[in-house]
Image 1: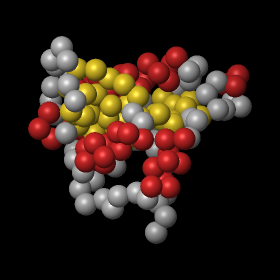
Image 2 (image 1 turned 180 degrees about the vertical axis):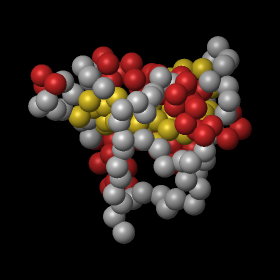
Image 3 (image 1 turned 135 degrees about the vertical axis):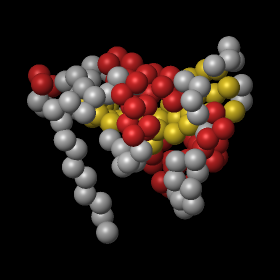
Length: 146
């Protein structure tokens, strides 16, 4: 990574760059409405992080820190929408932004951080393991609205 790399919170002003980057996650996704954009960035438990090289957004993920009544009232974190621009993969940018999100979750008092993926590629699984995640004794279940 170059010395001009910085990770910061994203805001509404970064939406165009973020939506462009999301095309490297889910090509062809329809863009959200302006109302959805403002609602997402106004949500108090949700943060988006972006890794920039200069002015260029290269990698991103989001973190929801969810209040909880178990574990002594400790919150938990959920990381989603992890993406690195295809031209910049394999250079540590994705790991850096995910580790930043994990650090933010710990700083918010989370007792665990959860990340799921629907990707079947073992290289993607290895990436998440390099970020510190382990499937261990957990099993994820997902239901999607039809």
